Amino acid sequence: MSDQNATVPQPSSTPQAHSSLGGLISIILIVALVIIGALYVWGQRIATTDIPEETNGPQPTQQVDNGAVQPI
Image (cartoon, rainbow, N blue to C red):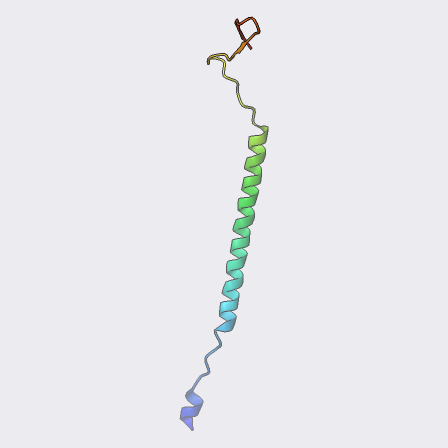
């Protein structure tokens, strides 16, 4: 009878798999929120940044009815 008492039942692996799956889902959600927030801030920064005009480059020209080329 001592052989029957020596056997220790093994715990089920289901709770461990469930807890690791929940942690993985939490990490994925946090990373996704950080990425979405970064893209939002980046988009706001691009929208408010003024594009400097070129002052040293060639100026565009426009033709007038008499055939002369006039700067814009």
